[in-house]
Length: 175
Image (cartoon, rainbow, N blue to C red; front, side, top):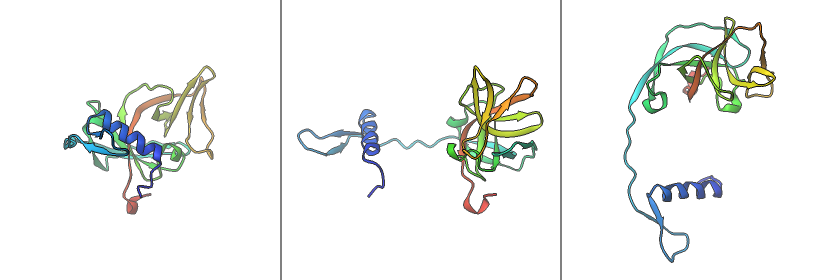
C-alpha cells in the first residue's frame, strides 16, 4: 500500500502523463507504459549562512551570530542573498514550520500579504504570516493558540525577508 489517497495518486499519474514519462496503453484498463526515464537532475547546492535563531511565538530580541551554514538547492534561493534562522517556538506549525526547523529566508525589504516573513517589530524579531488588509497590517501565527500581532501607526515594522524554504533539523538537534 502507498498510504496515499486515490485522488492524489490519480493527480500524480496525470502529471506523469502530461510530462511525457508514461502513457496509458490503448484498449487495456488500468495500464501504464513507461515512455521515457526521468532525467537525473542534480541540483546546484548553495551555502546559506545560519545567522541565529528566531521566535515562532512571541517576538524576542533579534540576535545575529553566524553559527554555520546549510546547503540548499540553488533553484530555491535564486541569486538573491539568503540566510537561515533556526526557529524557536510553535506558532507556525500550521504552515509546516516546527520548533527547531530552519527557515531559509531571501533578504528583501517588502513582501505581499500572505507571505511568511522574518520581521522586526522595533528590535524584536519573529517569523509570521504577513496580512495586509483595509483594516491594517498584522503578523499572524499559524497556530490558533497565538493571537495576531497588530501593527499600529506608531509601530516600527521592518520586513527583513521572505521565507522561501524550510529545512527540518535532525531529530537529535531540535531545540
